[in-house]
Structure formats: structure tokens, C-alpha cells
Image (cartoon, rainbow, N blue to C red):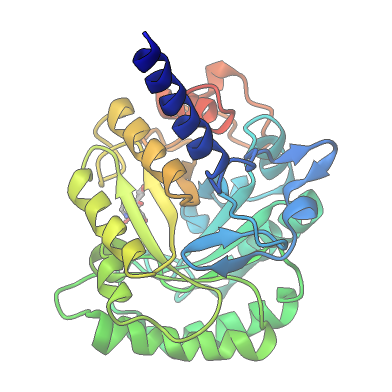
Length: 340
Ligand code: IDC
């Protein structure tokens, strides 16, 4: 009996110690807490080790939504929608996905106003905002490095003094010839230099090879600069254990990781909602303090869109359950901490 009691005591003491020493335990993951927005509470973000941290150096996990392509569904990039996502969905973060090809920035710079609308709404609402240079069809980020420098020079000059801003400088480099060493890293070094001339502090997130799935390759040859993180993307119907292993390896090598885009579906953005796999990923992200933005806010009718087909055509927010797709219902629950 005595032995049994000692064993119970030892186990409880170990568990108590483990929970107290969990460095992520004070993170409430709330968009607004005691009347204070997340940006009022966390302020200037910084990277310490592999953790994203608040102004006081405490690790924090940011969670929120990504826009869909702003050239198609930019009407949702407004204060009403971002405010609704903050207050009803508990989003701490909005990602403005500015495609450069597929009818995006390279064909019409006017799309930039969807980014600036997003940033101004985020500043007003006290949420963080990712400015995403959405490289996809053009594969190699170096191919448009001059345009990227011009764009980020303007963004960082205009908004660099606000702690709300996070720069994502290349969404998904892809293509066999697009390597970390010869393309992504030299691209990133140039763009980082441009941003840092105007904004010494805000976080800069760098894409990784193969549609941002290989952070461990970046981790082996990291960029020498402060407050840099590396992108990882996943789609729950396509990616799983192997991808998490790559992330673990990157973290072990000391590379901070941020998931700027993920979906509950197949990588096509369609093909059903994979709830079980999604929740496995969420657990992994929580345990490893990895911040994320979910793809995507739109009413296109594809499975990864949070709204049902053609719902909220005017982009007003204020949605009821009936407006949400199965994906939308699941993501809302996750963000509201109603499901784990
Ligand atoms: C998809 C959209 C889809 C659009 C397509 C254009 O969901 O409506 O027709 O882009 O190419 C990504 C990309 C993201 C993709 C998404 C889903 O970053 O732009 O959006 N995805 O396929 N990487 C993996 C998946």
C-alpha cells in the first residue's frame, strides 16, 4: 500500500511539474480579452528560439483566417468581415492573399487596394495581418524579385511602424528547378534587406521548397537575420505524418515555423473535409506553438471555403450557421476553442 501511495505521489508530482513548466500554458488564444485586442496585449511580436513571442518574450500562438485570392473574393477583405471574424470566430489574424499571377498583381496593380484595405481594417480592429505575396503559378520567386522589392518597400514604408504587420514574401515556391539555395534564399535575402531598411522589427515569413512543404531544407541553410520564420503549408486530406516529421526536424535545427495557409481538404482545395486529420494537425500545432491561418474566406462553393455557395454575396459578415459550409462550421469551432 505504501509503495502504491508513493507511486501515485510521484506520478502526480511529475504531472504537476510538467504542466507548470509548459511554457505555452498562459496563452489564452483570445482575439479580445478583458476588453483588450490581441495587438494591444501582445504588441510587437518577436522570434525567440523557434517561438513566436509577444512583446514580453512569452510564446504565443496566433490563429486566424486567410482571404481567398483577392482578385476573385477581395470583397471579403473589409472591416465588417474581419471584425466579424474577430468577434464571432475569435480570429487574431487575417491574411491578405495577393496572387501575383492568375490575374493578380502582375496584371493589375489595382489589387493592392485590397491589401491596404485589409491592413487598415486590421489596425483599426487590433488584429495581426499577413501581407502575402502569393507566388503560385510563376513558381520561381526570383523571377519577379524587382516587383516584390518595389511592393514590399511601399508596404513597409507605409505600415512598418505598426506592430500588426507580418510580411509573407513568397507563398509557395514550386517547380523542380526552384531550390532553396539558388532561388528562394537569394530572393528572400534581397526582399528582407528592402523591408528592413524601413521596418527593423516586424516578422518576415519566408516560403520553403515544394509549395512550402520543406522547412527542414531551409533550416539546414538558414537566413542570417532576426525575426524571420519559415512557411509550412498543409492540406488535411493530402498531408500528414511525413510532413509533420519535416516540421519537427526544422524545429530541432532551430528554424521557427509559421503555417500561413492550411486547408481541411485535399491540396486541390476540394475533395471533402478531413476532420480527423485536421484535428491531429491542430494538436500538433498547439503542442509546438505553431501559428496558422486557414484557407479560405470565400463563397465559391469549393470545400475549403468557409461560406456556402453564393452566401453573403456582398461581403457583410454577420453570418449564421446556415451561411457556413461544413468546413466553415469546423474552423469556427476550432477557433472558438469548442473542439480539440
Ligand atoms: C486555390 C483556390 C482555387 C483556385 C486556385 C488557383 O482554392 O479556388 O482556383 O487556387 O490556382 C495552395 C495555394 C492556393 C490554392 C490552394 C488550394 O496557396 O492558392 O488555392 N492551395 O488548391 N497551396 C496548396 C493548396
